[in-house]
Figure 1 (cartoon, each protein chain N blue to C red):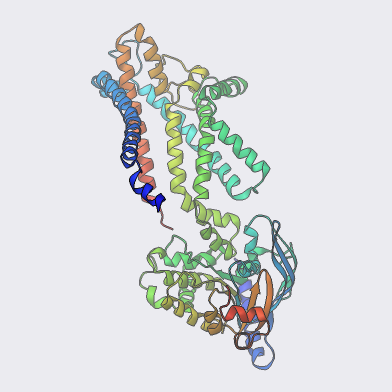
Figure 2: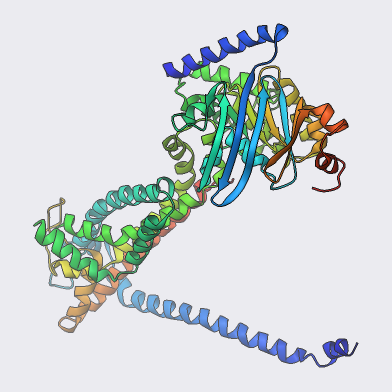
Length: 294
Length: 277
């Protein structure tokens, strides 16, 4: 009985409630911090760049003259690079994920491979730039062209894609594949007709998110030696190119020479953000549209 | 494609053959299990199982959770191999061929031995596509033939009247009991000889359970049925023979009437009278 009295009388209820509110405020402030930074960043960029965006800016060629400079070349460069990155990462990434998740036996070798893929996902992107420079630009002698840039970025996002595709495959309920095996379907028939269709929405979401990462990457491209000022538009895999993040990078550096370049950089950031925003929306739409109930 | 049709012809021929035989002579043994032992890694899950299961009969396997009844039924179509680290000794002869033999083609075995699972597990596809899945993976592409198979299988599973107007709707829109009958129809569509059922009614309400039980009684005219059940009354209602398993061993195997009215083993008696399990 003494214990019970202690429970009701000496329970420091006020102090506990106060402690709860303090922790709640701390967590709220952490969230607020991120939000404020984001808003300041976007507001500043918009303020600086939005008046520079018009049809001419989007469609014109690059120029040293800030008033005449346009980013069509960089947009096309980004598109061409993506045309390399998308098929390479999807085929190799989904293929590896299927092998690791569905064919390979659980064991030391598989865990070793998976651990290394996760580690690769954390390697700084500039290291991939060095790899690309050594292998694609010099060893294979492509030069700093679309193909070399695309393959380098593909390598960069592959580990992320493999991990997310593996998770997507793992999320397909086992009772569905059991039903298929139970009717005498082979592994490939089960993968092709049951597991892949169920996993494709999450695989696509994962790929689009990793592709957005590839679009925004700058560091590996600087290492590859992507030119600062490139007037002609790229038209093929073996053309030299520049990409949107590269353009932002060079204009920001050169803003000390020509003040308007800072505004051009801000305008380009807005365009890049818009592209990323559209890509992410597509990912969400795909996910919502094809999501299945089990 | 030709392989699949050949198999079907063979199966039909052998079915006809034995139905005529049934009237005069004894039923054929479909599954002959001899000294079967099974381990999940170190865990000895099945111990010296010896069982004979006969065609066109319903054999029920009962026993408390963890007694190995599900493991055993999954060994009969080698689905148990989907669990990593499984090893077996002994033999299971299916119509004379040892299915535990490495040379046995599991895909072929599983087209002759269908399975219905504990939880209704239709594919997230239309009712039609669910039932047509089996025939399609075995190479049947003609629309007219598929239509026939789908209708015949849905009728066989006593659900045709309920779904004939909405074959193109997703099977997930059906109730649990209907879904389970779709799964039975899906299984009938590959024209198996044997249907394995792993607690097919444990996730269903009493009325759906009753429907499935009636269906099982009908299906045994054409198929050999082996059913694992947690429900002793169910075993008593629908089966011809009953196996009682405990801790990975077969304690008693006899005619259902005899096992429930006059069990030979003390442990069987304790279990069926509700003293444990």
